[in-house]
Amino acid sequence: MVSEKDVSYVAELANLELTEEERARMLKDMNSILGYIDRLNQLDTSNVEPMAQVASRYGELKDEIAANPFAYALRADEPRPCLPHDEALRNAPVTDGMFFKVPKVIER
Amino acid sequence: MNLDLLTVDAARTAVLEKETTATALVDAFYAKIAAEDDAIGAYLTLSKERAYAQAARIDAIADKGDALPPLAGVPVAIKDVFTTRDVRTTAGSKILENFIAPYDATVVAKLEHAGAIILGKTNCDEFAMGSSNENSGFHPVHNPRDLSRVPGGSSGGSAAAVAAGTAVASLGSDTGGSIRQPAAFCGVVGLMPTYGRVSRYGLIAFASSLDHPGPFGKTVKDAAIMLQALAGRDPLDSTTAEVSVPNYCGQIGKPVTGMKIGAPLEYFEDGLDPEVRAAVELGLQELVNAGAEIVPISLPHTAYSIPTYYVIATAEASSNLARFDGVRYGLRSSEAKTLSEMYRRTRDAGFGAEVKRRIMLGTYVLSAGYYDAYYLKAQRVRSLLARDFDEAFAKVDVIVTPTTPTPAFKLGEKTDDPLAMYLADIFTVTADLAGIPGISIPCGKSKEGLPIGMQILGKHFDEATILRVAHVAEHALAPRML
Image (cartoon, chains in turn blue, purple):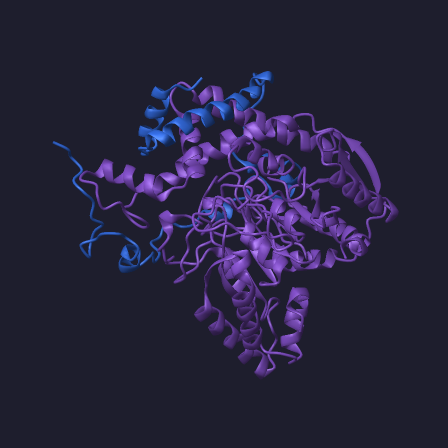
């Protein structure tokens, strides 16, 4: 069971604050959903490899895509043009024209 | 010209044969959107400047008599989770309400390169998280077949635009069913390609190991033409695989004689709506009439797909959505005095309830002490779900199921119970987890006139076979769609 304390802790990790009302709702919803997720424990998976990505399951296609279907993604380590500075800054809420500006980082 | 019935092929042919011009088509579609979209809410942003510039380019090619590209003059809509250069891109979220993308998603560039005209950006559940489009940060979408009902989600706007005839075809993304489920609810064709078949570059990430871009169309052939333009490796997305792209349109019209079609018993259990069951069973019967053989199969871990999905998808989402922090783009709360306060207040103000719920769940399942119990456990069950398909595809060529357990539900019907909403995707999530392709085609209507969808799943990179089967079923079922 998730407690109110857990909700506060997780909100802090996730950089959310949440209102009192949102916290109460979150407690209820997280417990309901995690309760449903608990049915995964009905399965014995001790000898099953975790699947982190789809490419590991391409099975039958092994011949066609050979040992490394993503070889093309490698290239010589040479500089290429990237997003121009002004375009990278264009959507920023606050800048000084050169850098993104943020509030004070060190609290004292 | 009846825009409600206009297909990709017919639009291009009309421009090619000078029955109309691309510019006149764009005029007609914007007039239709102005007249009809207020009641539906499929569009969030219209990209008129870009659409007319592209139409002028296509008309110039047609005037010169040069060869027209495959999607020349075809007006399309783009789900607002794909970036579009110089056009507002919100992902359905207030946190990106004023975001102007500085680059095009690969799929957007590819469609335009193939001659398509981008009419605008369609509404969706915020960051593609939802099954009804009611989680849009702006406004819900109404199902064009019955305005009191949801269009499905998360690509609800893209499905509704095609169903309403306010776009000829459109682009969506499917993470747990977000193309196939709204296609079923709106009575259109929706195709989720294999993971790695279509580039995700420029798709605002929800769950990176599950996000699949794909097309909507009125017909299977339209979906095939769209896929042809979208498929292929992309150096900007290193998960796109170096696998040759076949001629998808060449599959249209091929028979299904002798083909083995798996019907998984777990998808036809007691909870299934009787009208959905009857429609899909009739669809299967039509495939038998066309010479295919139905093979009963089992996908024994199906009951674990939703819990597996809600661990993996939320974990990946919590990580992907960390980037929305008020620094580089998007909303920033102006009240905060310190950096951490600014992060929290910005995210509190910018994200909607469902997005916060998923970030919280995802953060929880990844947090110290719970990672093995939830995240690693779910990844292991994901292997079992993928293995179920491997074993089934050793016996059959494709698998046919209902796309959804019920037809479209009413707006507001499931908004208070997140778990009930999650279960709307029960027949679609497993294919996302395994990364296999799937299509939903209309296969009948309920007594109330609501569309019912039939899902056809195939092996990795075997979109060709599902398109072939889908086209045979589409033609056999056409009389029942009137």
